[in-house]
Amino acid sequence: MPAGSPAPISCSAVPSAGPPVRSATRCRICDRGYAMPVDHVTVGTEPPLALDGFAEWIVQRGLLGLPLEDQLAGFCQRVHDAGLPMQRANMGLATLHPRWGAHTFIWRPGFGAVERTPRDRSFQQLDAYRRSPAHYLRARKESALRRRLDTGGPFDFPILDELSAEGLTDYAARIVPYEPLTRRGPQGDSLNGIFFSCATDRPEGFDGGQLAQLDATLPYLALAIKARATLDVAQTVVETYLGADAGRRVLTGEIQRGAVQTIRAVIWFCDLRGFTRLSDSVPRDELVELLDDYFDALAAPVHDHGGQILKFLGDGFLATFDLTGHDDQAACVSALKAATELRDRLPRFNASRLAAGKPVMDFGLAVHLGDVLYGNIGTDDRLDFTVVGPAVNEASRIQALCRPLGRNVLISSAFSRIARDCRQTLKSIGLHEVPDLDEPRELFVLAD
Image 1 (tube, rainbow, N blue to C red):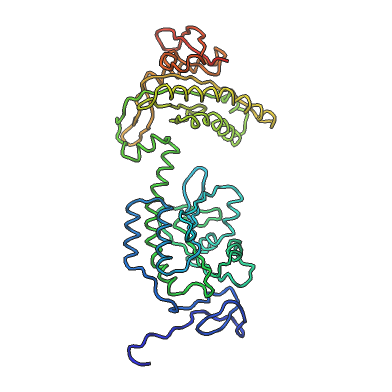
Image 2 (cartoon, one colour):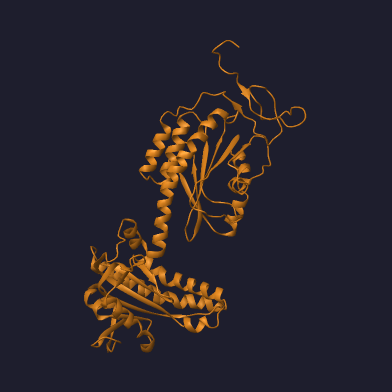
């Protein structure tokens, strides 16, 4: 070979035993066809991808904390524009969420936005995952998989049959692991890292050299994705356990003990009746399910009308409708609409449970209004982001009167005085002694 000549282009496929097989998968260099599946690829037959400065660009986008969809869309579009003939890309990412187990992201050229699909923890989703290339790679602790899609099938993964039916010809999948989160999938496989796959409709399939370039960029993508995904997980966790507003405050730095502020709010203090009695007779697993079902029913009106649940208190919860910086009347109307919806919803909910042979409970709710201290309270190393103050205590005491007065909802005079737009929906039931308060309080109920 003359000095300075380029290295000869060669085929990297490993032939199967026996003579060459006529197939749709042919190497343009050796002109042979091989039985599939086999990583039958050519190296160096296409120009290198134009990716100068690409790694730095990915890292910069990661530092900006762009949403996951934007990061994947930018990555795929730039790789596509650089010469990789991707017609579809997929990224799979496990998450920590009370409902979702993972998210998948699909990119296609010319479609603009990335399609994001949350994957729940149902058996159907788990079964689909077990039959996926992602599970195959993770369970075997492998990092790469390649399949030709133009051989007529059937294929070893259902998704490949779908992609083949769309006219795609070649498929490559990769796992880029990262730590330190240590999570396990339904079969014990690690869920750390990202799963990335791409497919093309190019008759010859992907070029091996270009795929090698793609492989070199994926760790940078994984690093950028990990940074944003970790933030998203942190936000989900704090909002799940603290509530949306309190969670945002904690993540933005309000974590010092004594960092509190006075806010004006409508206070909901809600309690389930009969839980103690049922806890002695209902099996433990059913008891947790019972609480979850009732909390779903009781909390939905709060969320639907703009309130936030600050704390679950055994068989009850504390919620607020913030009046600070908002239209006081609108917030009061929302809080009362939520109370009315709960009063009307629970009998139907209990009827459905009785029809199914399940135990039922009743509820008591106090609606009050006042100033509360909102912020971090606790010890140096164990804090609670909550509300405290005389108004919270009064709401609790009023709620305790629901059972003896035979009412599901009791509303304070403080709320009635401020909530002018709600007065026509309230009816006074007179003055009543409230435990631990010096003077009787006028209480109201929802008008029929």
